[in-house]
Amino acid sequence: MQTLNSASDNQATGLIDAPWVHSFSYDDQEDQMPLEYMNRCDVEFQKAGLRGVSLFFASGDDGAGGSAVRNYAEDPSTCERFHANWPSSSPYITSVGGTATGRDQYGQEEEIVSSAEAGARITTGGGFSDGHYGVAWYQKDHVAQYFDYAENLPPSSMYNSSGRGYPDLSAIATNFMIVLGKNGQGPSPIGGTSASTPLVAAIFSLINERRVDYGIAPLGFVNPVLYTLSSNCSSCFSDVVTGNNRCSANPPPSCCDAGFEAAEGWDPTTGLGTPRYLSIARELTPPWGPEDDDYIPKEDDDEAPPDHHSSSSSQDDGLTGGEIAAAVIGSLVGAGMLAGGAYFGYVKYQEYQSNRAGPTYHEFENANAQRSLIGSSWT
Image 1 (cartoon, rainbow, N blue to C red):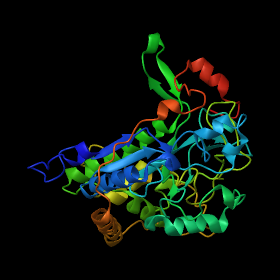
Image 2 (cartoon, rainbow, N blue to C red):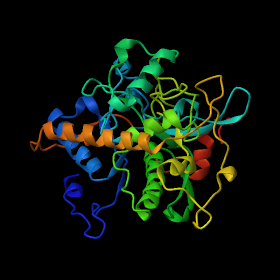
Image 3 (cartoon, rainbow, N blue to C red):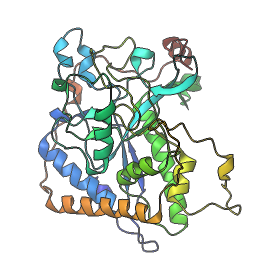
Image 4 (cartoon, rainbow, N blue to C red):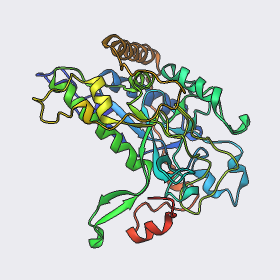
């Protein structure tokens, strides 16, 4: 992060001379991280956002409980308290969870929470900061709505209900096809928020490209804009309302008695839902026209996803220029004030990942073996 933030500005554009979007396939337990190290990283996260850089972090692959739950059979105490994942629990980055394709009770295909309990390779990470971070200002209303309407909440002793909630949004993380050329294997399905995170990052890279082409600054720290969009643009996200994250990765998984359930609106399994590129691009970039190579008329776009939030119909007016400006300016001012008062000391962090217990998660497997792990209700 220090290397990224030390990049100079481009003389021609005045923007940071470095990639504007970064995807990180990394998470660790918040309660095992040195506080000084987290504080120092938060400063760098804020610096990056102020310079127009967007940071997307994977929310983890072991549900609400974290990787410790993999040892539940040997140590049942691992389910007594959920372990928040960091940096996803930091309010200064964008956390990305994972979804899968499943079927509802009527046999209709739908997007659901990625869960090893249901046959996926991983269970999306999600929950609340253990106490280092309070609920982020830009998500207060969304988190409050979750607690007002959520069903089957875990016992309050298992998590910090006043903490920063994550993930912020999600994307497909099961049967994600890639081509590695590994031993001539060809296309191979993988699973993980390490797949969904770069997918989301790619979406916002395309949006930034359009903005910069029209002389508009890149989005930078995008969370305030995301949460504002979710309240004003019903077609910008596909809400995920089925599934939970009570289990670990790797079928057959270890499962706690409780986890967080998907719900209407934001929830600690898939966040705001999955982003819909065309709708978000229309809100955050100049109007498309027939003269643009990538122009798609709005009437040819997919239908807006169903509105789970209300039984009454409402018109989707999108965001006004003032609303977008207020969200962006608010994020810059807030980040600037926090950055100014943050701790600037240097702390060396000793790696201890190799000492962590639990089975190794092998993400790459033969395609046929992968399909055998997925039940008949999965596609």
